[in-house]
Length: 231
Ligand code: TYD
Image (cartoon, rainbow, N blue to C red; front, top):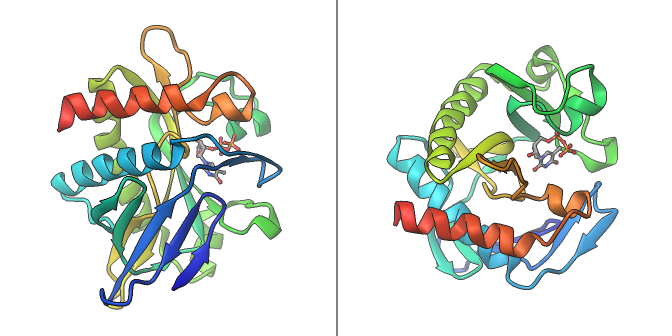
């Protein structure tokens, strides 16, 4: 049964697995709130496999994630959660919206990294939230900041080992019936910025956003480097 049809993924409720969902990653990419889209062959399975490896590694480091196991090239079984209506963004260097909306220059290091909250609501154009507003929405931002900062440290190390600078990334969280917090959604080059350490060339969705190249070979490079280093 289809539960949610997102822009690039669908969430289904399997008949035989209580408290779980399966998430299907489509061969689809969108940008600018869905204004721009394309259907790159193989992209769904690349993002699913990259996410699976990263969720597995984060679990090894003690981060609670919704990931259970991969059940097909572009499908993963996950815990069923209530997803918080927040996009949590961690920035190690300035790029994207922080450059567009401030005086900060692209590429400027952000030390220590910052954690920002955006409302997850396309109809309201996903505005930047203050921590006070997050509290007023009934969500304590502090455990999210702490988890996001820990996740950042692990991801920085993982990508450093395969030769990439992790510029920024977006994550989402969900809670189970006991109020326990889990990392949810996906972690892939669709939701992060990755620059080659030597050349500073892009290996992420900016290639598509800015018409700067084909994402499939870039995502394939990330996957094969993760596989050869961590599997
Ligand atoms: P940000 O710079 O705030 O926005 P944009 O990508 O529109 O310039 O994004 C920071 C990081 O979070 C970047 O790696 C893209 C990712 N992200 C998403 O995956 N989904 C989103 O809806 C947003 C706003 C960002």
